[in-house]
Length: 352
Ligand SMILES: [Zn+2]
Image (cartoon, rainbow, N blue to C red; front, side, top):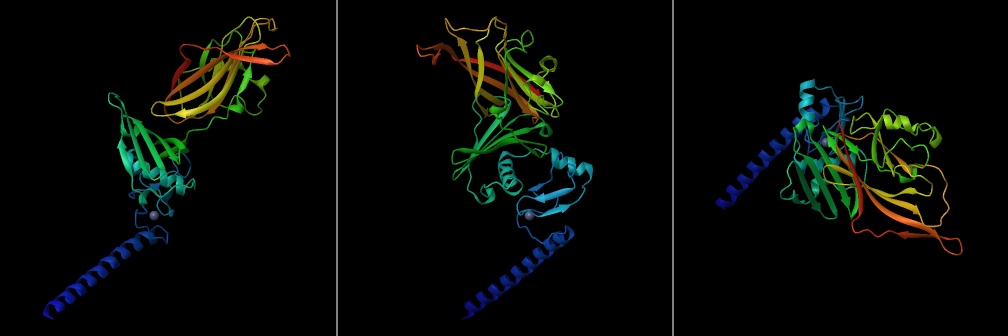
């Protein structure tokens, strides 16, 4: 009996403590919430720049003004002092945090169907291969979701995290995070490439040319005759800025006759750092006896990419070469030239 009474007293004491504690927390949170003009009380993040999962649209006019909690979606308006803001923006972010932050961003801002990273049991971690210096790779898995994060080892404010989110074996989002700004790696629409055979003669040598212009060379109308190839050549570079419109010219160089073609088959992004753009390209050469035009040609393809986030890029062009002949019925026959080693062209460039 005595023991039970003690237990009861203890229980009441704990209950009172719990009520006081809850009330105190609720009071503190409601204070924050009312100050921020938001009725939602978020248990996981403060609705302030100090909140772990606070986000602002960096690079837009609402930067450091419109703020959003990526956990609950609440938003508030506030200008934080420049030094406070820069410290937040430039801080080093742990890879496991980047994983959660990007998934919350995809879920709350882009409204993609991705799981809540704060409710998942993540496994995995550092997967930097032995002997690789200068960058880090982290891979995290939970259920059917895989998040890969890689970044060069540089000053925190210069760190560009390359991120890939896969679900059920498919890439859901691929992009970068730099100074709290998310940029999706653009998908290259290979149907938007422009082929040309005559304008590049004497202009483009065989290889990959990285072009940085202040506008899309195909804008406003995708009329190939309107493209100034000489001007594009004049804008060839290996170092571009985040404001530049980047294009690639992949050229086979000059041929004394027609009949040589180039065709982009596919495009994909490869990770990790540096970011690799992989193209698969078909070359076709005229076979013996095939009639060709008697004029110099330069088979090339213009691939408009767009603006890119800062970082180091490598372009890979994987080449299959075919010989074109015709059978007795006049139908084209493409014969793949078997090579001991795959023909691969590469080029690197930097965006800063
Ligand atoms: Zn919240």
